[in-house]
Length: 415
Image 1 (cartoon, one colour):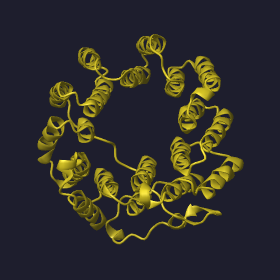
Image 2: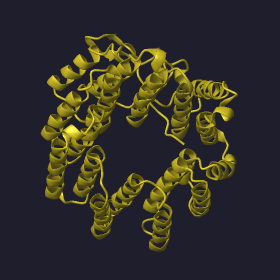
Image 3: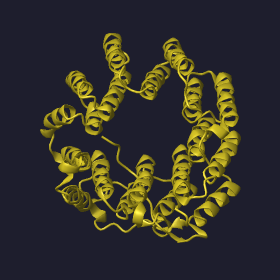
């Protein structure tokens, strides 16, 4: 299953960076029933979300309707992550295709998790169901997962709203089908039974060589590993199952899983365990030939984890090394991949508290995103960078904000 979310709106004009509706909270149809509102967010970050959605909406519908919706949905996801459900809903309304339904369903689940059961929540659920059921031929074209993803979110919202009896049935259905999205959310509400069913579902998906679901289910196990960290026996059991299951998956997945285990170790102040996972991960770097656009972001993320483990100077050194690797191998990296490779370096500098360095690298990321003359990769990079800055709480200076606006205004043919 894929993760849902993304949002956006159009700007009043290119010289005004905020979406029109962002200058004033959208009117609510049933204010007496509303319990969920946008959390306070600096206007600069709202502006970035507006620019990102506007850039995503610049894609011509023909032939880029799928790229357009995917990029718009990325902004919706950022809005939910930043506690901006009203913007998320408004942006979702402007998406064409199945992701609109995903946004509606996510909005309903978001509100339900926070105790709201209002007319707008019920309307979002009804609209999500209608979109999910629009295409009856999805089973034949292999796209049933799109419908199922929406309906699973709908089911979760309905369970949260008023039907606790659905919990067991929903958990069983989610795990038996390998639906990681719901299983993960339900995982916060169950323990022993979920873990056993998780093992069963993982064994089944591995037998079927189902790459996507195996990856998602192993990610759930990492989450369970973290939540059961204090239970040494159970923690070791989960780690053993993860290790015996990742053999057929790409090395990148193994690296992601090791990173998840290491993050849990730092969270629980276990430096010895953190270094055990880190050592294993860096052995993978040396044993295999990684493309620089893959290795640089991973090294930056490991540096950030090292900072979280309390090793500040070592983290700074590793970030410098990641940047040096990028510059040394710049010509080996396709121009459409350079911003993606460098963005995690900027994010890591901000995470460790070096705002000046983060600003310098975000500026490099922005320029790397316009090296290709076509607007399609430029949109993808601009959306990703705006969302990154907003989600991570980095405060760009006026020069960087101006440059972001310039890039948005320059989007156009060729696509």
